[in-house]
Picture 1 (cartoon, rainbow, N blue to C red):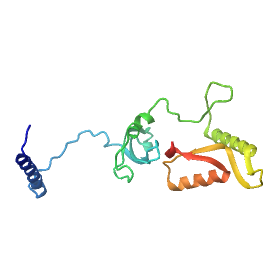
Picture 2: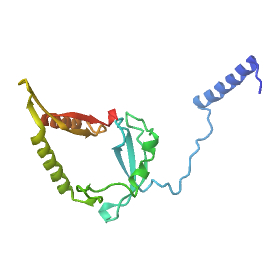
Picture 3: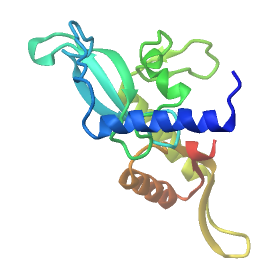
Picture 4: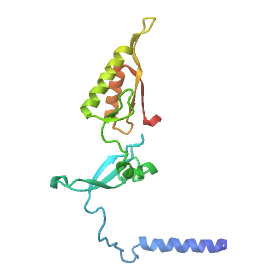
Length: 195
């Protein structure tokens, strides 16, 4: 379609005047959408943070089920939080696919360990996992902690173990994590913001 310059301005003026009429109160009656069975009407809404990267986007989780009535709650929908200051309701493709991540058959829900020489993973309790990690860290720190260099300079460092922290956590938990890791002498400390 070919428009001359004059015709283009006429079309633009008509569009602006038509949209201005609605602003001035000359709009038709409000259209109301009828919702009979909206899928989120009976759900419980919970706000959270996306677990994928360091951006920390806000998400809203919707679940069906009532724990007070012994009904198992099941997550049925995840969307971006429009009130969150980071993402304002938008999600990246990974965040938009969070429901598949939560409902995946391959999702690890409990701690597992593979002993030396074994090709099988075995499930252990959370207490066993924390105890095992603490014992292994203590043994490694005792064996490899460097208090002073050969020149007698105090360094207090532990170079054989590193720590990968969650970058989507709050400032307070990040501060505490940093203080604990540095007080142990670890120098290899990073989070997903750098990955």
